[in-house]
Structure formats: C-alpha cells, structure tokens
Image (cartoon, rainbow over the protein chains, first blue to last red):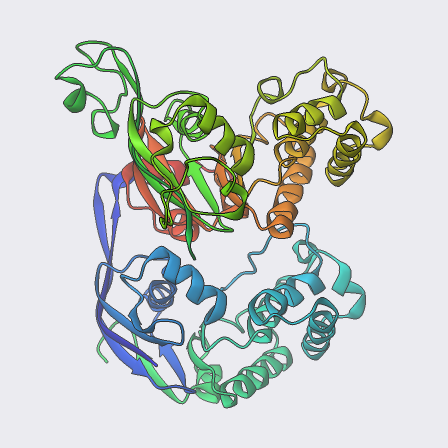
Length: 228
Length: 291
C-alpha cells in the first residue's frame, strides 16, 4: 500500500544564518493494505516528520513515497502534483494531528459530519446522525455537540480530532500521537475504533509515545532514529 | 481538479525599462525598482493556475505585487506582457469570438480588445477590493449599485433586478430595509458585504478577493470570512484570495503563492507553505506571524 524508500529530510533555516538540520536520513519501510504500522523511537528522532512527509505537509528532500492510490494508481507522494495531493487528501489519505486544527466557529457535530458529506457524499441528515454516534462512542457529551471545540479540554479536542478522521474511512490514515492527551479509558476507546477501521481495510501509520499503546494496536513497528 | 484560469508570464512595469532591469530587480535583488532607469516592475513573469472550485491564496508584504496581479487578471490595468486564458465554461459561451472552434481554452485574454475583456469580466468574474470606494459608488443606493452591475450584464426589468439585489443583500446579511441607503451610510464590514453581494450578482464562477478583511476589527473580520467560506462552498466558486495575513489564507485556501518584489518566490500547498517554508522570505513571513 505504501513503500517508503530512502526518505530524507533537511530543513534549511535561512533566518538562523543558513543553518541546516537533518531530520531524516535514509528511512525505508513498507506497510501492506489493512495493516497498522507503528513508528517508534526517541523524541526528536523524526517520527512526526515521516508522517508529515507522507502527507506532503513537509517536502521530502530525497527518497520516494510510493502510495497505491485508487485515483492514480501508484503515485510518489514526494513528487505528485499539488492537484493530485489535494485530491488524495480529499478521498484517500487522512491525517490525525497531535492537536485539533479546524476552522473556527463551526459546531462540533458539523465538523465531524462535514467529511462524511464532502468525501463520501452522505446526505446532511444521515451524516449528522453518524457523526452523533461517533461522538457518543467517544464520550463527547451531547450538550457539547453544538458547541465550538475551541472551548473544549485538550482530551475532548483530541477525541473530536479522532472522530473527524475515522468517520469517513480513508484508505490510508496517518496518526500523530492520537492518544497523547487521553486518559487510559478514552485511549482504549480510540484504539478500539482504530482497530475496527483497520479491520475494514484501512491502512495506518501511527506514532505513539507510549510503547504499551503501540504494542496494543500495531501489527509491526519500525524504529526511527538510532540503530534499528 | 481541472484548471479554470491560467496565466503565464504576467508582467506589468511602470517606466520605459532598460537592459539593466532584469538583473537589477526582482526578489533576488530585493527591489522592484530598476537602479538604472527607475522603472518599477510591479509584477514580473507571474504564472499561475486557478482550478475549478478552489481557493488560491496570494501572500506577500505591501508592495510585493499582489494587488497589481489582481488588477491585471481583472483587466483594470493593461499588462505589459503575458498570457491569460480561461477554460471553456457555460458562463462564457455567449462571448463572441472568445474560443476557437473545438478549443478547450480561450484565446489570450490580454491581447483582446476592451469590449471583449469587459464581456469576459462581466460573465466570469466578481471582485471585492480592500477599499469599498473602488468597488462601490458610495453615494448610490446599495440596491442601485447591484442593479448597475446587472444592467451591464444585460438585465432590463426593474422588478427582476430589485428582487435579485434584495436576495443578494439578504444573503450577505444586509437588512432589506436598508437596501435603498447608499453604502456611505454603512460601517466598514457592511460595505464589504455590499461589495460581496455586488461581486456575486452576475453568478460569476471566479471571485477575486483583494485584502477584503484588512482594516476591519476582529469580530467583523471573522463574520466576513465565515460568509466568504460559506459562499465558496454554496456557489462552488473558484477564488483568488489576496492577503498579507497568513491566518486568512490558512482559513480559506488549499494552495498558496508567495510574492516578493513583484515575483512569485514560492508556491505550494498552504499547510506546506506554513509548516515547511522553503524560501528565506516565506520563512521570515511565517516566523513573523502572531499566534
């Protein structure tokens, strides 16, 4: 599903006198369809950088990221056109960031229903019902469904983030510390949701800080940074 | 994603130009004014594609050429050089001699006479300027401002124009009982909303927004931006969003061009521009952002 070969990433910081920072050097791994690949490694090793390169939020400096897309066949995400990347993000590749970043002043329920409408063409009312079920399952209290998530606690925001990402069933889901700000019970619910999604064929690449979480969900792990 | 508008080598200079201009100006030289002949290159060799139903952001500091670019695209100013084409689209089928038989793209719009440029603009484009007095006649009623636009698009029935103007003003949250008042009576945020209503009156597929929220206070800014976002989705508009505010661009646009000294120095997906800026100027811009 995804073959990463010799991925490297350099940051050239012009404002710091042209300082160059090597964030990734020759990272290679692959993940098969419907599997969960965990990325492990110490803080600062570049785990999130790998995810962001796959999502094209970062431009890879070298190497290739071959993704088997439904729209274009096998496509190198490092060099795909912007239009292709936008289309893939709309219909195939999802990203759960560490922190909720959404359009302000939109009610929680609409935020979760929106990807169902836009990406899967589900009618508004049904999308809202499904969004409600996902939020219930993640234990976001009903009265909060019509509120803006900017006012929520960190853990609640993180769960809204998950709800937005898992509802529309992408074929590749990238997860950056999806359970970091959650208590054990909520984290357990999230892991259950993710494994159900995987069982329906979604391929996932995830970064977890907590090795226990990682071992509970990952089919295989790759170590980033240090010796493998 | 299919392109709707494409520009190639768009250039506008003020002054005679000389042999030293090319080396003496542009982002690399950190000025847009030629040191030898004093020609200002407001916009230099800009190429871009605007896709259907996308919002494309243009960021850059004051004087970087953003507004010049919009004025060239809207035929407010003639271009010194360049190519501008629009894709065949239902709104433009009636403009005479625009498309060659069987061609998906128009002839070069910049080389056409003013009459046809105006026809393309009326049929395909709406514009909202930073300063409402550029887009509105401040002493004419708000409804009249819109009717004026409808008249030039061929509408003739007063009743129909009034109804259309009322609907647009209602959509942009201007109370109907105020549609006979001139925009000069309105607050800055309301004036921008009248401008938006006017820009949308011809059902254009393309909307050009030039710093529409600059100078508005924060809560008014939020309301105008929310409205633009809703209209974009509702009317499936292609938008060119010019702003010096990365927050505005981030809210509305999936792709962004960064301009400096009249040139495009970087382009990419908006999240990539914000999180992994490549050019030294973009890095400065992102680092200067208030959080």
